[in-house]
Length: 315
Image 1 (spheres, rainbow, N blue to C red):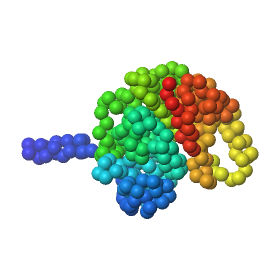
Image 2: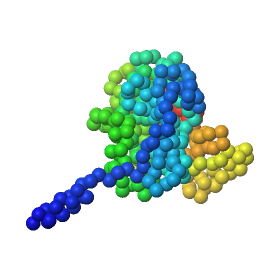
Image 3: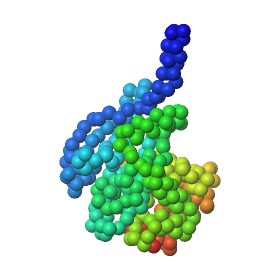
Image 4: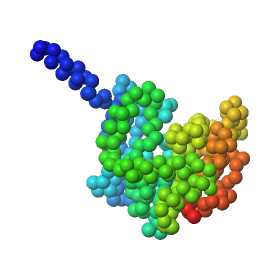
């Protein structure tokens, strides 16, 4: 009888023992903005920066690296991500200088009592660098962008991420983010109305979108906005690159595309699947080939653009 109980206890242990995430974040270096000069954060000498590598189980070399920043003992904020694989992995690469330039412009020109509406990761960066109020302050980790083989470990990954980032998101904040992302994927005029309803007052509000928000929105709402992407090397043959994009449009029956400059030697192309996708608020706020320019958007006023970031005043 005792042996049976022991076996049953061992089975229960195996059954309920948490499955670990298939990767770990390993600290590489720490310092201030001078040590991490590539981040272009010289205007924020008080920040503490930490560099990590992402080490996956069974893989010798790191699959990604990233840098976080924090004020004093506050939770870390992701400010740089570099993916070393061909898989969709957690986030998209961006030029660091774009964020610092955007933050400096907001800090200089936006009223301090204005509200900033943007994807949760951008919101946290803007809050860190400008002090402006943002509707989202937690590391929401939505959508979860991981390789297909890891999907069965999603629960373990979410737990690991929540612990690392110190996320304490309330149900209210998650519901507000759902409303925000739904508004971006609604038709333009309807989406702007939904954003103002989300704010709940006539408070001066600025909406910031980034071209990489397209793919995130597409993962969350594939029935509203169909998105695909492909990276291309910058070879200097722009005519040849444009021809490649036109081939992709024709072969996949895509509606249009837009570009993101990832690095001096690489660009990323985001494609929209159909006209319905092109008429969403998010798509109308970004520049797409053969579509109306963001300056022609009549439901919100474009006030600033920096790299992949586009800033609008909410009516």
